[in-house]
Length: 356
Ligand code: ACO
Image 1: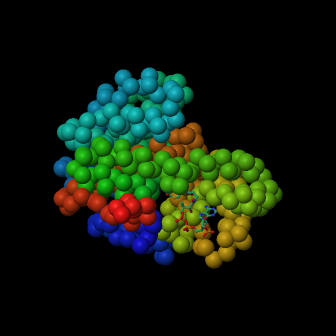
Image 2: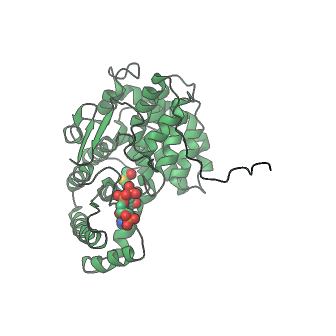
Image 3: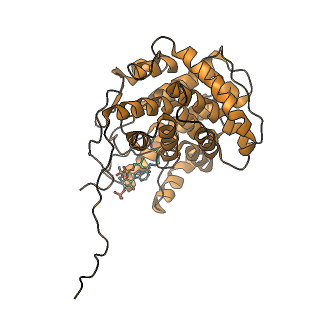
């Protein structure tokens, strides 16, 4: 029996495939590198939603734009409740307020995830929400709603690349969670809220903020080896490294590193990150020889989102905004099987004493 479900196949999906030995990610029949930075988030969502979401192929940009407007009307009255919550907790509160039975629930969930991510980041700082702009693409509008400043085409492209890169990734913990909830016929919004709850932990989607904390604490490259080695000696995990499936470099790392490199004036930060990454890989091999621990998606997520002016507490909400399109597709795919996910546990507790 596998505790942690490694190697257990719990679903059939046509949505995405992760090859951990080859370092390959296939999304809706395409290699990640064919999509990220080349096809918009809306168009990749349409590929995932084909056959699942009515009208998805026709005009996902319009569908998501309308969904952001509807979501904003629902969510803005709750913004005064966000001040004492972290952004990801605020996002959880906002998404949990949406009804499951809403029409266009798939698009609403994804539109709402974008609006909620931006609103929760602002709300945590005591700032009022910014309404969506129906003329903008999803990525550009999220960044504008979060920062309340105009977004350049280059920045919009950077966030769009990020949202596509994280849109779906096999049966990771949050997607599995979303499918378990969907399998009970609980509804799409409930599945997305459940996915967010699973994503927020530091072992899954909560790592990119701590990656920046780590880079700040290291400070200079001369300090990197000693700092990283000490952290591992204390039994800590290096954030942005290691993965349950990938035994080689996560293909998403290079896509995001390239996207960060395309943003003007950010080369110093990237050069420092690259040097720390190289040192971390040496330290990991020294301390955990043969474990094949490599760079994961979170390392360059931190660099890219920081370069876009997103506060580090906003990284996980943006991850959820991108992944929500995948959660929705998985939830509908799972619901259609009509079968509840219900594994077994092995009882290791005490047995009732036999009557004498
Ligand atoms: N730093 C130091 N040691 C590590 C790290 C790390 N980042 N990752 C794994 N290890 C160690 C484990 O402690 C384990 O050591 P042991 O055999 O001596 O006990 C060994 O390497 C093997 O671990 P795995 O079984 O490969 O890792 P697991 O599948 O349990 O965990 C996880 C994967 C949670 C991602 C882990 O690598 C980790 O905690 N990374 C840091 C946090 C992080 O970057 N999270 C984002 C993941 S990407 C995503 O979900 C979007």
